[in-house]
Every structure is written in C-alpha cells, then in structure tokens.
Length: 80
Image (cartoon, rainbow, N blue to C red; front, side, top):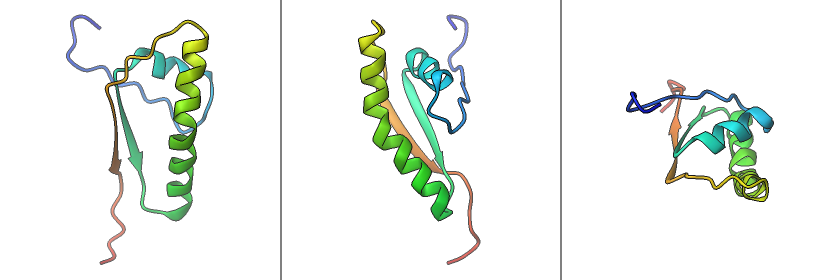
C-alpha cells in the first residue's frame, strides 16, 4: 500500500474473520447506511459490536490503527 494514497477494502456486512482482517489493516472506516429500517438495524448491530471486535484483535496481538469511523447514507428514498 506504500504506493497508494487510498486502498478500499469492502468486507461486506458480516461479522466474520474477513471483517477482522479488514479492521486490522485499516486506519479509517467508511460505513454505508441505507435508509431502510432493516439496514439501519444491521448497521447498529455492527457499530455495537465494533469495540468488541477491536478488543479481540488486541487480544490476538494486533494493535488496531483506526483514527475514525465515518457513516454515510448510501441510498436515497425519494421521500421528503
């Protein structure tokens, strides 16, 4: 990654080892949040579990380098 300013890792929505590897390699999280209620609840579950996942990395000897976690609306509903 030394030759690049940004490297994007799309881990998907699952709380699994792939996500843990992505967290270990990241210094910034971008979390898309669709406006549908079911998607919002999934995002809340993810954000609630995030500290636990970071702690798990630390227990495995990995020091997370996250400087920020940014959420953003990923779809528009067309409703006002």
